[in-house]
Length: 308
Ligand SMILES: Cc1cc2nc3c(=O)[nH]c(=O)nc-3n(C[C@H](O)[C@H](O)[C@H](O)COP(=O)(O)O)c2cc1C
Image 1 (cartoon, rainbow, N blue to C red):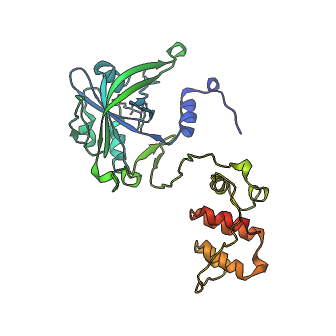
Image 2 (tube, rainbow, N blue to C red):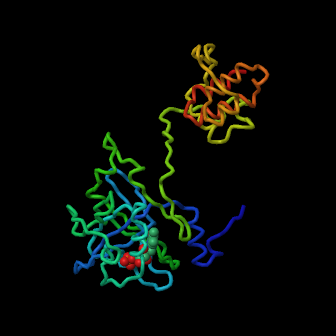
Image 3 (cartoon, protein in one colour):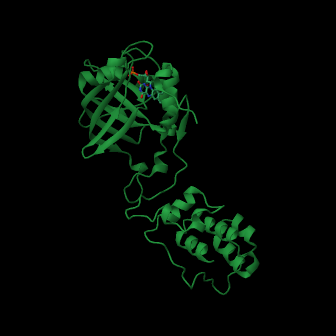
């Protein structure tokens, strides 16, 4: 593994090294205006949320490394103390890219990229009507980052004073459905990621037994991965073998273990294993337990592993 010190790198290399690993970053599509009301639209991936009471986000519009000029967005927000931030979805991304071109301050990038201005409730600048999610923001504070050593960054802290959410991205319970949002993130270089490979990992509210609470024969499994082990280690107490496990209905039928595993059917694989005592090896139990884990059936995975 390489160890690299920022002082040993040129600006471009350092920029790419930072952004290749601090990724994917959400993209703030920022609308601001100068004191004459000239509207400006530009994307910023130095962006995140830092507080929800009150809701506070921050963006990082830099001073151009080559030009030495401040971005219009930075100057506008410093002048007017307000902006809107629209979320960037996959369907918007190439139009968003157009707005990142170095147009002069007199150009409204809404027109260049064919976006529609939607009227805000509190701030005077619009938000992007084509985006399903937007924030109206007021500037709290801008921190100039290490100008003493020639730093070109800014940390603009913004308080959210209104949210706009399209009905089309809400599920039946009124929560934002990430699949319907279809957001994109910025990676290093010119790479983007699309948030359409979604999975859940519920944050534990109890104290999991953890890796050091797993029995040795599970911890050193030749089959189970770190993610598999972690899903076993979420349990609050070490499970015991339930003497009634496994139970199959009388008419239950299964193919061979391999066919059942290939079909993603761990119950069938377990049934096949129970029919053939010679196949009841540790390796097989671990493979079947892994299939249970991948189906979200953690109790069954534990019981299979305990079937020694
Ligand atoms: C997806 C994306 C993310 C960007 N993120 C940033 C950023 O975080 N900070 C920055 O200074 N420039 C960033 N840029 C470049 C600015 O969008 C670009 O300099 C733009 O012309 C600034 O517009 P303005 O001068 O109208 O504010 C990004 C560009 C793209 C395409």
